[in-house]
Amino acid sequence: MIWVTVILGLVLLVFLHELGHFTVALAVGMRPRAFYIGFPPAVAKIKRKGIEYGIGAIPLGGYVRIPGMHRPAGSDLEAFMGPALHEDASLAPVMQKVRRFLDADDLEGARAHIPELRQAVEQAELTKAARRSANRALREVDEGTSSDAYWRQATWKRIAVIAAGPLANVVVAFVIFTAVYATGAPSSQPTNEVAAVTAHTPAAAAGLQAGDHVVAVDGKRATTFDTVSRLIRSSHGRAITVTVDRGGHTITLGPRKTIRLQGRWIWGFEPAAKLVTYSLAHSASRGASDCWTVVTGTFSAFGSLFHSHGQTQLTSTVGIVRISAAALKVGFNYYLQIVGLVSMSLALLNLLPLLPLDGGHILFSIIEGVRRRALAREVYERVSVIGFALIILIWVIALQHDLGGNAPG
Image 1 (cartoon, rainbow, N blue to C red):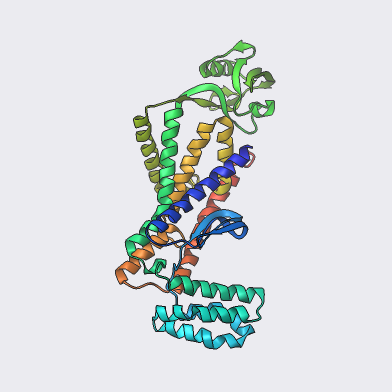
Image 2 (image 1 turned 30 degrees about the vertical axis):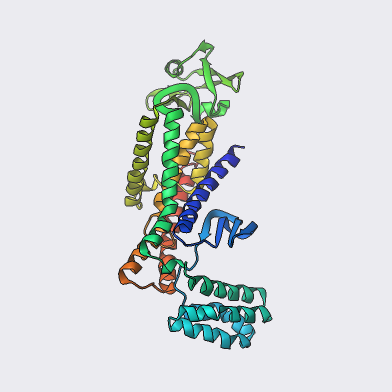
């Protein structure tokens, strides 16, 4: 159940991110053609008012298909139609007719001949792959020449649609942080509840678990963490027993010897912090402060990306899931804080000025607004290759840190 909750939390963040794009696109007159959680092929889908809603089989994110992200070009049409033309040369005359209009920048003329080309494709005997490519060509021209095509819109509309996704994640993070402070946020004061158990320690060997409440050490009652800590420190390396309350049941763990670390005798666990509630106004202020802290921390991490210190601040999807699961075992508010951090991080990552991220599309919208002409698809694709490479590099560095940081030591 814990892992299901963690995964659903991440899926919800992606859903809200895409919902931001979707909602603003509708508001400014760019009717999306598809709204997916996950990437195709579709596990389930339904069409309503010309919009296809679906769940993709590849759970790596989601997408909203906004019409006409790129200016349609004759060369793109011919490239996508290539496999179909190879299998049925009779498609060439009508395809060339549409291409001539595109090359002449006559979008209405090209659009007028799409039905003719579509009918020719439907009647042609094509393999599945060729038909899929031909249908994509038709879709690209149809959506790219429509009045609500993204590339044809005012720069402010384009930026608003793209920025809406990251902004949704910022709002979600702020709401989560505010809710946590209003209902009980971890403070600097420790309690006798176990937040985490360190691997390869007496506590781990004895079976201590996150969420346990320590009630006694060597049979001596302990109602505060200060008492627990004092009793453990006074063991001086001898074996001790620790009595815990686990889900309403009293369990005695051990005996296990304590170990010396940094001049102190320990058993090997971290205490949970005491939860403190604040007024709504104070909670909102602290929530905004936490959002800003994530911003400065993220820029610091990227600024020192190729130094060991900067790499320790990066976390991959594997690390996020692991940390979220551990936090959820301690308490739901701990988990919510992690979700808020992930939401802010998702927003900031997407705002990096790299294609195909949202920040890259915002940057290119500004460039096209200044030059007053859309850039060719080839430019987007070439720059996206560089962006993909950098994103993968960041992900690999983060994954190495997550996996390396959990190696036996």
